[in-house]
Image (tube, rainbow, N blue to C red; front, side):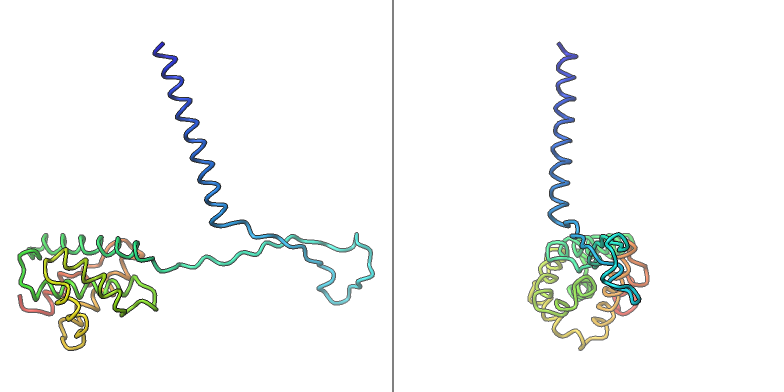
Length: 202
C-alpha cells in the first residue's frame, strides 16, 4: 500500500513537471516567436542569370530574420530591486569598515543617498536619468535605509553640483553600479565607504 502511494506520488510529480515544461515552452514561444522564414530566389538576385531558366536551376533558400538581442535597461521594479541590493551591500561594507550608517550624522546619510542616486543613474536608461521619478525612487529607498526625510534627499539631489562631496559620492555611485552591473560586485575605489572617507571629514 505504501509502495503504491509512493509510485502515485512520483507519477503526479512527473505529470506536474510535464505541465510546467509545457507552460514554459508556450510562454517562450509567445515571448519570442520564431521569425517567419521567407523564400528567396537565389538566381534572380545575381547578375548573369536569366529569369527564363528552368526552375531546377534556381536555388531557393529559407532565410530567418531575427532582430538582435538588445541589452535593455531594467524596468522600475527591477531597478528598485537592484538599488535595494546595492544599498544593502554598501551598508554592510560601511559597517564592516567601522562606519554604521544607522547612527551616522544626517550629512553622512545624505552622502549615502547621493551615492545611491548615482547608482540609479547608471542602472537607468538615458531617458530616465536625472528625472524626478528616479530621484523620488532613490529618496524613498534611501529614506527607508537611513531614516532621513525624503524631502532632504530630494533637496540634496537637486543641489548636487553645489557640493564637491555630493559630486564625489554621485560619481562613485555611478561608477560602482556600472561595474557591479557586469561583475556583480562594487570595487573598493567606487564604494560608498571610500567615497565618504576620502571626501568628507567624519
